[in-house]
Image 1 (cartoon, rainbow, N blue to C red):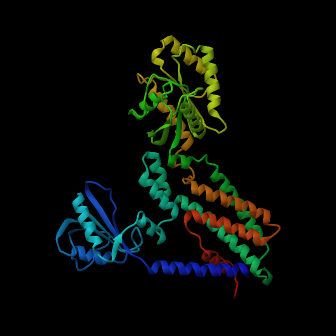
Image 2 (cartoon, rainbow, N blue to C red; image 1 turned 180 degrees about the vertical axis):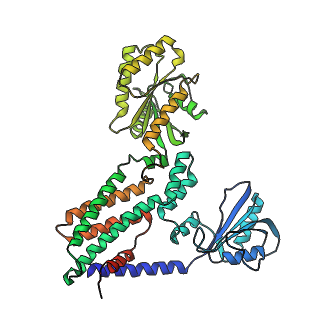
Length: 490
């Protein structure tokens, strides 16, 4: 009976925590729209005193109908001075974003107006300013959002590209949380069945076939987790930005290419070799995909200790890259057809390194070549097995559009379409907990024939890891299934 009692004890502790959590609740207020001058600013409150604050600021005797916009004179609760005439929307809990009584004040967005209304709310003793993210935190605590939906909301607010927006909206819709919740429910049921077998099998209330069914559930879940984790980190890359690194020899035009793509002088350009000593980054939007484009020091041997450090950092950044752009100066008279081909192959091989990464070859300064030389190079690249090759000129802009198209194709291959297929892992912490869950399921199989108690503990660990992603870990659910699936204690 040890496992049953432990579940019951945990259930009692969690119930006490929830009771204490709901007994103490402040009313908070904050500016929800952006700071600075704007046409309309939205200030909102959440908590039990939202109703009283509304009465004091508007002098209304009764509440307006929920979710209906009403024009109101917003007054200082102490002096009665008119602060602004704006729109008020009342949201009665639990039918609100936070699950509590909420009120929104849509006022003119001038700094003086916003400051006046915030000071009026702050003058009320039953209100306090909200902490960062507290409205969303209350929505999670009151069961309005799963933790994955909260993270999707945060990603949506910070989304800078079209594809990031799509991924964030999909996660905010709850699809990712529903997947993890489905797996969690399967683990809860499997764990409940094992707990019941351990505690009550001697009373002939639980059949032997229960354990076989649990084994099948665990094996199926293990395979689904493996497939989910083998996604090439596309969701995380899309959320954080794909690492694209410009690499090559000195004076190949890496900094110039960075400036052309960024459409601003991000990096210093000079004819002096070795100008770039450190990594220069620019965050860009390429066809809706976010990238972090890095210009690096030219790859060469140097006696200068500062430049050597720059080369070391360049090689390190190449090792971390998702896409490497090998920039080569094709106007170099020292590069014959044969040496150019050999150099291309050796450079691509060295940039490939140990990890799988995409490589794009950018042959720069074609404006300094004759048309005959350009045709010869194009044929040479077509005949040889090389990564995608782009002939371009940072000086004239020729070939840049083709380069960006090829780059976008690589980004699409890496990140995919977030609206297609199953939902992607978007957070590093998700991957950590999912990997730990998979490891626990593997250990379940190890202990299964030797110690059923240890097997049950591994399922409990696996369930806890999934619960850490969604923010829902409760022993109460296990107890519910024990009592619903088995006729125990009749």
